[in-house]
Image 1 (tube, rainbow, N blue to C red):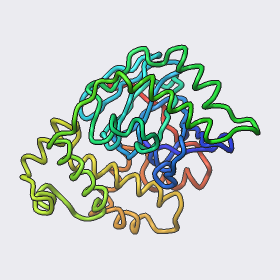
Image 2 (cartoon, helix red, strand yellow):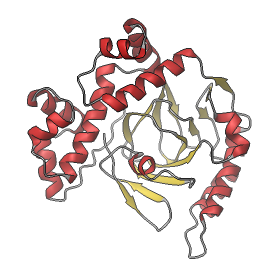
Image 3 (tube, rainbow, N blue to C red):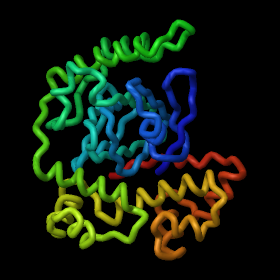
Length: 293
């Protein structure tokens, strides 16, 4: 599912609504600021980003999948996602969630804890405790005329102390580095006709090793990840350009309209034509998230 962001205040707080990758704004305007996203209901396909992410709920629960391993995130828990970790979320519609994002090098004190490492377990049980809640509600969501970004950064550094100080981590290994190279290649070449043989040749990795990393460690397939990237780009072009649907199909790397229609509908429950029509009419395209058992 894709999402859009609607600015709620003049600070970096966004409400999750209906289209674009969850981190599209963060990736495009990345700075040394802390960003906060808020949503009612959550269902996100596999994604990865350069930020450190803290995800938690005011109500409800969700299934969080990080690098192929699924975890139940309950109210009161916090999911800690490190940079470039492939992850997805799936929840019921009646949840209220927040996501805090910041670049890994924002706080020099925590750089060594984050750089080239990853959590052994991304779920901090009971991490959303009273101190966390007070910091978040009274300082990070503070948006009066006297608000300054420095206040949010200071509060986030304290949250890092609460969540990261005792968080067991491990060094990124050869498989992790190879996965990162594979994902980066896909993100740079997904509009091209690439496959396992292409990536194997370009990255000097055995194609069976690539398939093993994607399926067994990341929990996705090469085609599945490429299709997510293609549909994300197609959604943006359908919403913001005057290109024909056939031109968008070609620009996103699909070989034929039939495949484009099928893959787009699988992710958005609408054909590209119906999606564009709904956008023109100003309809809310947010899908009701569903639990994936």
